[in-house]
Length: 376
Image 1 (cartoon, rainbow, N blue to C red):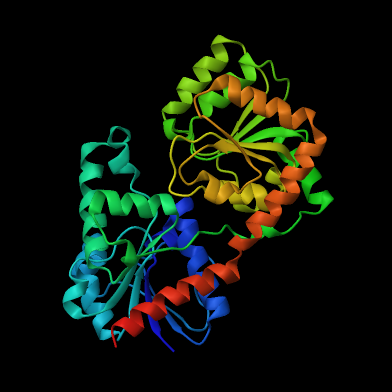
Image 2 (cartoon, rainbow, N blue to C red):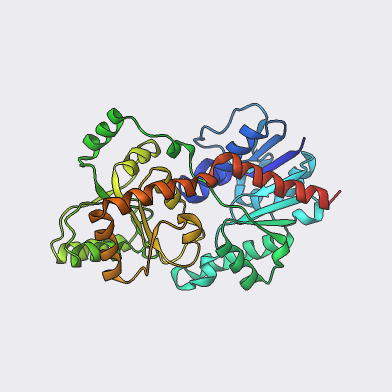
């Protein structure tokens, strides 16, 4: 049995990629390795998620005036002392960082690095954020006993930018929420269509509406390719959304629906009723929406190179993300060729089954065991 600590901030207070990863890992390990004792370190008490109050899970909050007054200081600098007093065998930083000074306490540690996009594309980030991210990730990669990279692309970036030995890095792929494993009943699908005013068979894009996700290329492909099929866009909107909407208004494009703040439980049926999932992102650490689509038995069109083929497998269609003609032609090919579409669904589903929760939990535990064996 191990006493395992987690930085659980994002598990409780982030409802996008990093939060989903944190919640999933904690849930998977608790489900498949219940003999361990899990400590979830949370910087402050707010509305929590469903991952707490389970046997074998202990929620730890800041104590003392200084820690409660400055929870970010507690999380980044004071936490190692608490880990030491809690006799933690191994601490896992789930979202790109471990607390400063943890190595001084001889506490075993693992850090998951999701991406180093801020180093590869610094123009997408402001200077202050780049500096903070670099300091935290560099310290964590140098001082953690082992690093988990969520893709081979991320592993390559860690080696390139931080000169870390490849032998210190394990690639453990992410999964997606198990709710995507289950086919939604027809009655639920019909209710979702009515709720959002949709008809089944739309094109689907899921992800923050930001420049990196490259929604404009999809809209241009639909317009220039004269594709008469609705596009549903699900995700938080940034200032980039105005660029896309200005293009839509300029060319009087119809049938583009933007949906924000979609409840998580609505996502599986929304995926399952799409005809194609399109994800022409310029760069990702991994690309969980690709897995969500493949589990939902929806054909995927996504970016060539990088991590995308790791998630998408051999039977997704890969395009240059700014080649509008290629994107349009790929959409038409899937819509017009039912045999191709069925093959993409069947082979894509076969591929995505290896990203199941049991396999991920097993791979994570093996990393932990390696650390413990190396330091006993």
